[in-house]
Image (cartoon, rainbow, N blue to C red; front, side):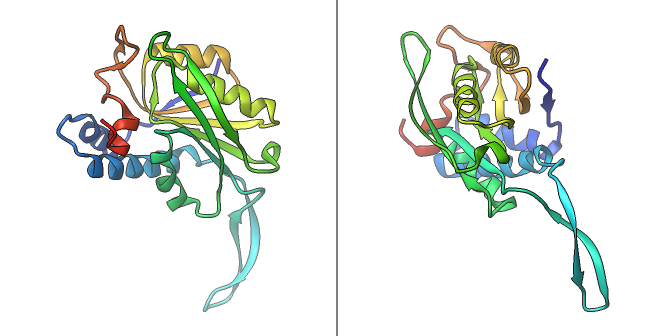
Length: 209
């Protein structure tokens, strides 16, 4: 069974409440998504590997920890996942960024992939797949499938809001991938939107509705 981590922090809870409000405009919504992503990434990346490096402070020489290994890769699921990237890059400015494009069939609610571009040496990197909403789980499952096909092994997924149905679908299909969530909502409605949710994250980030 996959490890599911609920990031239970008052700042994240507060900012997610602001996200949910129908009255929150596009500019504020984008800002909140970025801030929440940075706060969640801080927890998600708590086990990054380090190595010791000799440095000199103004006082003396010392040995101190620095990040080790290949730079992590951040993979947003287009298009809503793009809203989470800047917040993560604020913590990891040297991270590589790939993209996976998915769209949802409005009748079947099934995801369809249309684009995938991953950084080189993906098999040697920590990979963070990000999408604000985990609804049915189809897009996230398919994205991780594609990353694994291209050699990705050390994968974590980060979503701001999830449904129980999406968590179940994802953990059953990818029991080896850690999942980090900001909130677990009640259920999906008949249109496969999360309840109470926040509507369509992509539309609210980009002002397309």
